[in-house]
Figure 1 (cartoon, protein in one colour):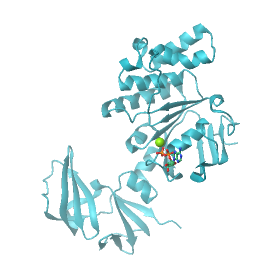
Figure 2 (spheres, rainbow, N blue to C red; figure 1 turned 180 degrees about the horizontal axis):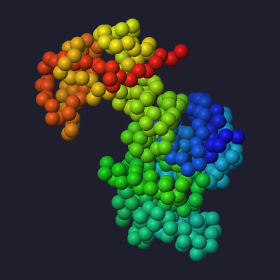
Figure 3 (tube, helix red, strand yellow; figure 1 turned 120 degrees about the vertical axis):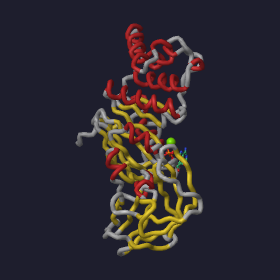
Figure 4 (cartoon, rainbow, N blue to C red; figure 1 turned 60 degrees about the vertical axis):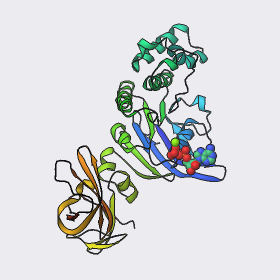
Length: 339
Ligand SMILES: Nc1ncnc2c1ncn2[C@@H]1O[C@H](COP(=O)(O)OP(=O)(O)O)[C@@H](O)[C@H]1O
Ligand SMILES: [Mg+2]
């Protein structure tokens, strides 16, 4: 056996005859916070439902803490769930919402009170114990839903886009809150998001998925700085991706030569890595947008359109202006061709 706490072995998942996750292998360590990241429809929720026991496996197996759970019913897996819709009981106050699952377990009264009070205090809601969900903000409801899962003391907590219903500021607050709860409780968490910045901010490791397949798995640093495929590069902001052919790179409109040697495959640049104002290539400004600290440009070039950005303090180029630019070796990401 591996040292994995949650282990998915060759898991295949299907709706009817349609396989949406063909062959997933994933090991998660105890106490880890892992983010499942990927575009809508790539199979994140399906994977979570399988871990939770809410859907059966088409093939493969899932173990938790060394025990094969493949055929264990959802309520016997020790897995907690927090979804983007909080699914709180509207007629019960915060205390009773958190107590609900504990009462079902028929725990002694004093233990229920103790656990609920601890749960509410963990998420900073002790002072709102008597409030009903409708009398709480979105962020408070989300924290309540987290407390309700935590008091069940699950081995694994699954969170499916738990922050996506919150506004930008609350989302940032809840991120920090989740990190703190995870650190304080040491609970193993699997966190689903389609937002790369959320995954980067929270996760010990990120699982980037595409069409039910793991595209890349690694730390935030790995994914952000060393994406290994075109898809991963584009997802993490290397928006200008060109195929290398000899000493040129090729885009949809044509080729330009590069001044350095590159491996076969692709080269990619973040908008900020494009050197504006000097260089061997010519561009026309097709779009310009002020974005606070930066100006974001779209250039028409011999390669096709490229995206560039420059600090807002630098002189702006107007729409239609001509300029020179370079795609320098410094800041170029090399994505070697697959064998
Ligand atoms: N109940 C269902 N019946 C049939 N197909 C589904 C069902 N739920 C999801 N799918 C399909 O499975 C794929 C993965 O969906 P899902 O896991 O919800 O993606 P994600 O959570 O990454 O957005 C999608 O193509 C989706 O259309
Ligand atoms: Mg989903």
